[in-house]
Image (cartoon, rainbow, N blue to C red):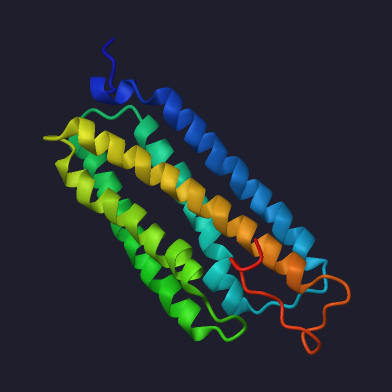
Length: 191
């Protein structure tokens, strides 16, 4: 029986096992954190959650999906390329939605760090998939490292944004801090 995985992908198996497992575990952890935060006195809105909370889950899922795609026993590199290009298109479109949501919500005014970590870096990750995917058959090595970089970037974005959200909620929802008494620092200005 022949191996269905094209030789260039076979060397990445352990990398994607680690990345995929990390993405899946962090998705689960984010649900636990959100459940715990729901029990605090911090008040959020669906608009701010969809602008700053949901994208964290999506980016963890994006890293997981890239890992799954790279672990499938593909018969051709074009199949991988088309699938990752679709992921890139969906990701770029989702970042456009996140930008719209961040501008529309009124609970929190994003600062430069928020724009970088919630919009610019995710756009870079998803756009790199879109750009590198059609180059895969002719530039295998560079494309494979680009996909790996995009998956890692999505993991780091999710970790940063989850930490930023948790610290923001802890600081702004801390006992003794009333929104009328003191203004809590925005994410990124309390680290």
